[in-house]
Length: 410
Image (tube, rainbow, N blue to C red; front, side):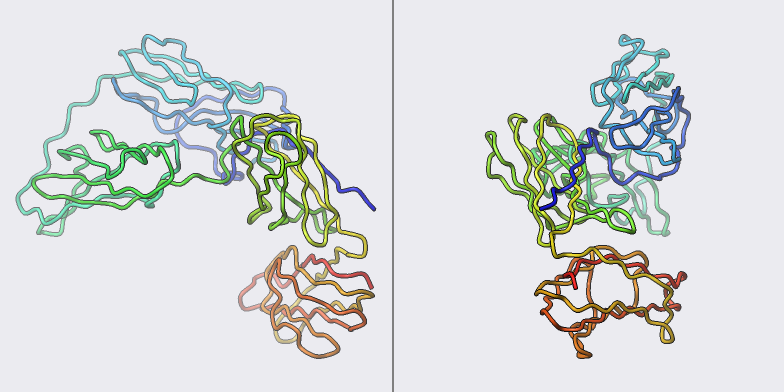
């Protein structure tokens, strides 16, 4: 039996910003010789942002860090920064999560370090600007809260804004004039007297504000992102397969802890092959990863707070096949024909450019009018199967379709 291929990647993960635009706002970046990262991407530079370089006295502000890699992609690594420092703590301090607290007028410099690369940003603490004239109350029809989505990530802050609608149809920002802010559940998300909401725990909360006798509410939800960087008692990772067309993710794989105090705990990889195991007391255990159609793989874990990658290989008697070519409905259909030597299944594991129709026939009889990704279609031995893929030039600007799929040998 062939052993599964295991790759350990020691890196904190920040998902969702790879390939994002370079952050706007004045910042200074440090770069030297390119730094190889545990994930294989080469770190070219680090920059601090975002917004202007002014911090109002007696306020707080989250400083963010962006990593630029040699391939040009940019990732938010704020949560992965290993150290934050301020050159003038008497003017402004900075927490170990990058939150600046302005204490006195003056200039200071913030420095952050990530994977041995440092970046610095000079900021200025200034007295707060005199408040603008209070918004009018005459002709006020209603007030409401905004802006953006109704979700906030746990352990982050967000400014809730208030708007007033008047009888003439005009709308004014009244955030600074709100007389009171309230949270229905401060244990989930408290709100400050200036309307800054902090996500403490997952759950729903109603935020309310009052102005000139009017009251507005907004139902918000605090969520815990599964793609957040792993904590020191956590292990995250991905289950993947190396195919002829490249890496594909393997969802629905069972990831089991073998040994240690968490022996027997099982989590299931979700969309994208991602998994997370929390509440671990110590390392020195193994992960046993299994999924139908693949060989069971084992990975020794010697350190927590890291991301791992498990690359599975098909089981004996299971082939990782490819079907690709140009298709245009209704004139071109590409096919793959095979006759399994044993019972098994068909599973499309990856699709580059979704096709309009992915039908499966057995002995010229329709088995499935459309085979979805990661759906197992049971197959019988000795039956001649044909996978027919027809694309639509009307909806797909590229007529090329490429599928990877598992099937029995034969």
